[in-house]
Length: 138
Image 1 (cartoon, rainbow, N blue to C red):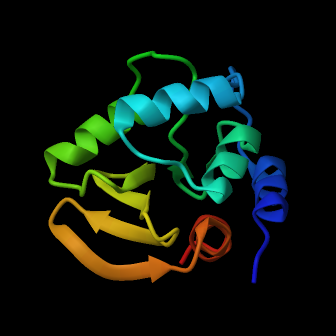
Image 2 (image 1 turned 135 degrees about the vertical axis):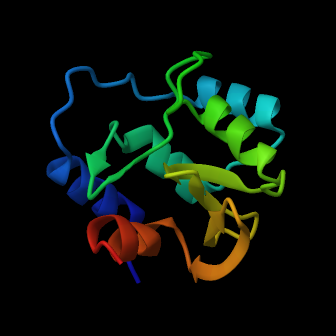
């Protein structure tokens, strides 16, 4: 089983250099996003988002929390767009991929949501998904 802290450290070391890195969110900002999105963030997601920089790697980049800013990579905007293709309201999109989304479900599993509808692709947790998909490219 993979550890979220280890996977975040690996991703941060592999990422493409970007001109501007976002400020990492604190608990206050996380709580604001939970309220706005009406989603309770899992402990694993909180560990992930509080420690991951804006990572562009293997063609994927994460939704960010950089304040209430309208940006396609901002979690609020990403969630709004995902919900237009009928993403369940209790699923949290963590990465957008060409109009499809990797999402954390309420049970902590990561699922792939296609703009064509639900699929059977799931991973046990964020750490496993990072290793298998984001780092491994599968």
